[in-house]
Image 1 (cartoon, one colour):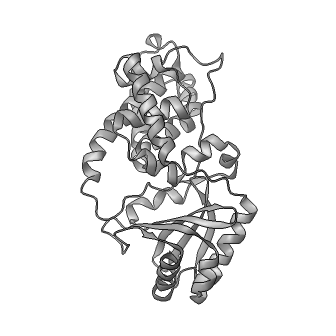
Image 2 (cartoon, rainbow, N blue to C red):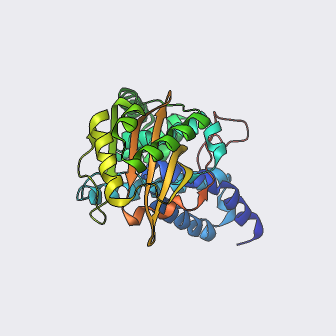
Image 3 (cartoon, rainbow, N blue to C red):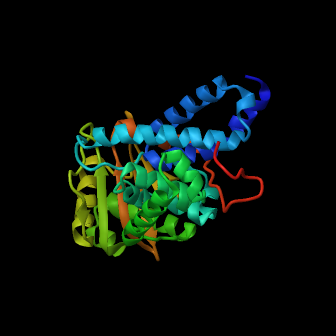
Length: 306
């Protein structure tokens, strides 16, 4: 492939990965989809492609949809709670409020409750702003049907979404206080940092110790965290970072990265905690990933995908 097509793909890669990741909730699967799409892009005859970016978006989205349908069947047999694979995000991701919300753990868990077609339609329409006609071409349905799916998915998400816009400085302070309290096993101090309806969700995937059901409520979560700290030394080797545009900790043991703990913080209180311990899901938190989102349709974006 000449430098031109390779450069075009490289320029689109952050967008393509973001689309695939929001559809799949897995960085590994998203990378597989992007790589497969690159191979298809490498093989296509250039004179057949009028709009390279549009062709790539269509290809990645279709491949992600196919992958999602297969993954859904596998997830039905998943041991314990399933959480999205965390991805390490650069600080500037949080500057795009819509992008930050769309890749948050809370939003990805809501998207997980949608069917494959509903999820793709919602992501393409509501997050990336593609017209109904273009989305219809991708999912292979009529525009009228896609409009109905989009409305149904939008209402579904609206009823379940939780909006948080934490101040980075406040979030860092809250997490630092959380670490100190957890390190000393101070249940009262932990409770003071948590909202009454706080929820802690653990994902071990049957490969690492984790609660099989969510732990809810300030008292229960504080005691649960204090218990973990006593047995594992939580916070002994913790690295502050940002995952999914949310404050997070990378927790290490002498054997390597043990878990990723992602926090949902609003108005100085922890509302959600997501502990990813499945070793197959930890790699994405080690490498910072550039993400991109298409804004409202612009004059430099093709009218149709492909």
